[in-house]
Length: 83
Image 1: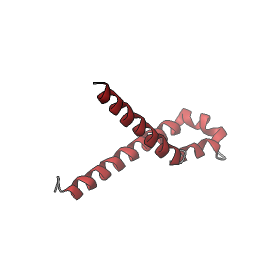
Image 2: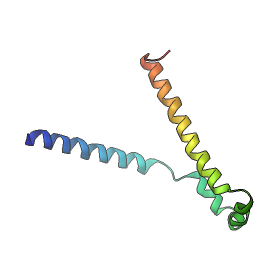
Image 3: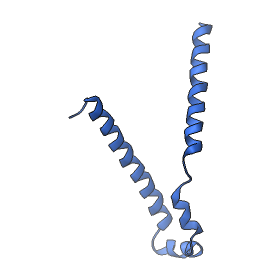
Image 4: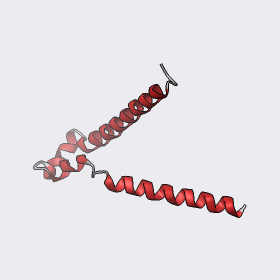
């Protein structure tokens, strides 16, 4: 039983190293440029009329979800699990 625990511990630590390496390679969010742009100081005033920061955040999550869907669909078609 101890061997099984050691094996899963090794798998988990290897998985963590790979995930941390992948996250380290990814760039920062491009949507932080809005806060650093010329209109960054006026966003608080614009948000009273149109909540731009929330719209950008929702758009970012939506685009990631759609991209994951298309990647997943392409992998399934490649495996020929879906027509």
